[in-house]
Image (tube, rainbow, N blue to C red):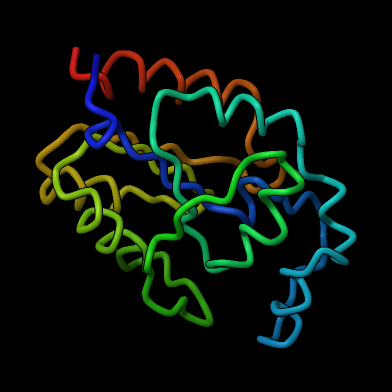
Length: 171
């Protein structure tokens, strides 16, 4: 049996991943983003609550890897029916994402993983991130990009589960 301290990590994003955009008018200011991360956000009705038990059953150590930081435990965890998760200490999110540069989370996730197998589930993963992780992470890693319009699907969860039970388990 795998030592729990060495179980693969699962880095979970919120916006566009667990909370699909699906035509929503996205916030354009920091104040609007602050309101977006509250339990009163009407878009939270789009969260697939059935994903909670499936996420909890994955053979890994899940962590929030999101600009929501600790708000994910206050808002998303109860919606999904999952316990509070550790929060990855991330650098401040940029006001705008530049598709030509490494994603702002990539270095922090690789540093935290420190060679442990990991899955990163996010809607903003790009080829540059995959190349950088491949060159700088000594263990297996799955960078699983989710469609931000639909968010995480059952097929995405099946792919993550399969990877965790094969590649992530060190087989």
